[in-house]
Image (cartoon, rainbow, N blue to C red; front, side, top):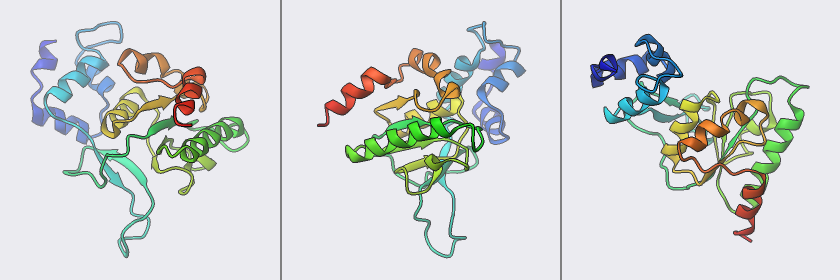
Length: 204
């Protein structure tokens, strides 16, 4: 724990800027998943205590000739400001990840159906997925699309930054489903099959 507490803001910012995840920093300091003194959550808490947060940037799809209109987003520590504002309080939908064409049709159909129902109900849809071979990552399917890894750290970063109403983990297959318990333990509002239906009914 002393090693973690000895990390100053410039050290943490440099590590994150070089691309080290919280869990990698934890392991580098001798921590483990079973140890609460220097695990991923402890590093996250220390990072936030130091004020080291990622920024949301918009992918320039028009080569800087015109302002980008599509919300293709990613997070980085190598920036000084956000490209967008966060006042929509939408619902996050986690996609299927690295599945290829032919093996993820059912997951993508579920995710797209979920996103379309959200938007039909006048709820902003925030998709998190990094698979360009899916319909869910088409530019016009969601209100915001994060081309990001489906990890606990990144989903938490987006959830907190977006002030999201909740996260749907049940439409993307095993990868997002594996995040349900870790996210729930951190207070994330998980919208499951039953909760999701009640959530929609409240808007009808």
